[in-house]
Amino acid sequence: MTSRRTLSWAAASVGALALLAGCGTTGPMTPEQDPSESAPESATRFHEQQVDFEPCDRAAPETGVELPDVDHECGVLEVPLDHAAPDGPTAQIALLRVPARGGDPIGSLVLNPGGPGFPGTEHALLAAQVWAQSPLTEKFDLVGFDPRGVGRSTPAVDCYTDAEREAGATLLTFDDGDVEARGAAGVGLFEQCADRSGGAEALEHLGTRDAARDLDVLRAALGDEGLTFVGSSYGTRLGAVYAEMFPQNVRALVLDGAMDPLASVEERRLQQAAGMQATFERMATACTEQAGCPLGDDPESTVEEFQSLVRPLIDTPVAVGDGRELTFNTAIGGVITGMYSEVSWPAVTAGIAELREGRGETLLALADLYQGRTPDGSYADDLEASLAISCLDENRVGVRESAALTEALFEAAPFLDTGRPAVEYEDLCHEWPVEPTLGIPYATDVEGLTETMTIGATGDPMTPMKGADNLAELLDGSLLTVEGNQHGVVFADSGCIQDALHTYLVDLEAPREGATCPL
Image (tube, rainbow, N blue to C red; front, side, top):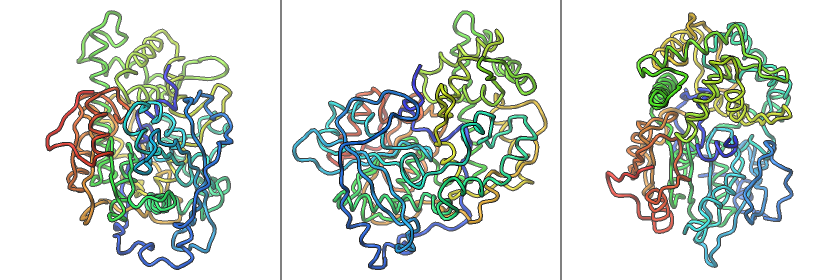
């Protein structure tokens, strides 16, 4: 079975399971407003720092997944915790660099796998492996980083203990039928996260605009006049916000599996729900064409068949062993995990077949991959970081609107429907003491930006093609359309995609208008 890290790398997950997409309530910050434009002298030391890359002293990954055997080195970037107060506390950004194979590299190629909240250091190792014979590894040092609050960067977000996660602490905002848990999920959450994550100030400076400022410090510290960046899923938000704030500092941007910069919280959740429903239907139809499909042989009834299997889990979970259970929540999570790429569809079908037999091993294993759970019961903090970052980026759904939004989501994606009345609930971020800082729409009216490259897949379940269309148009850049069912394609085994990538990143020649590639 594919590892969770491989899933996060290859799919560049946007956090679909958490359905935390939203919009900020404050206006976008223009480049003229950015503090770097008139930074105090004490702030320049961060841009002028030199990163000391040394052999990595790294413990085994939390997942226990074997990493690619690639020559690499590690370093730490120091940034202000609050860029408006450069003399105050600092954060340390974990870096990993794979040196270029060629003798005269163009510079650094900085990578972000998405999330928000997914660490990017190991992402650089996978990129080096996938692109081992590509001009990209010959012409660029590959640099991965764990954004502030994430992974090995410090301070890092930690909201729940492993025991609390194992007991079912929710990070979800979709309705899973557990009224009591939904009502209590956000109570005391900010204080709890702050106590375990370096204090309230650390949690108040985790937004994408903070990360974009860190990215510019990284660019300067690496010695690059212009940033060369590949961001997938949430990484497209980070890249687009960087382009808005520092357009003059961009050399090349690849934005893969784009989040829609124009969509409100409600619009983007509904877009995503519709994308997942379309993928579920394609996956289920493929199943019905095979003998013994657990969803039957009629494509028109697969949703009802699925509902009949998962809805009983709300009241009666399936025992899996070692005291664990497959719940409605984890069953849906396992199915969603398998939607990221068509190659994972057979695993989902096998899991649904097991559920029909009263078993839940495969779906629970898929859910564990997404949740970052290892066999010993420990959990990665990726989704906790995702929640905290989203709370700084996006507005909160009001209690009065929550039930109506849930009903609309069920209508757009009936495979998620619990079959029970939607309940009102408090947004998980409702106790955050600071207003969101991103601003939606973002990346509008950007001037002085070099041509960018946005990539969208026609069958992307998590960030539907409309987001790529909108982002490419806003940035007045090129758009590569990929025909296929996958979220995130920069590592795809497609000569067409790979040729387009290195032609743009190395030679700065963007795809022609109307360019398409098969997956």
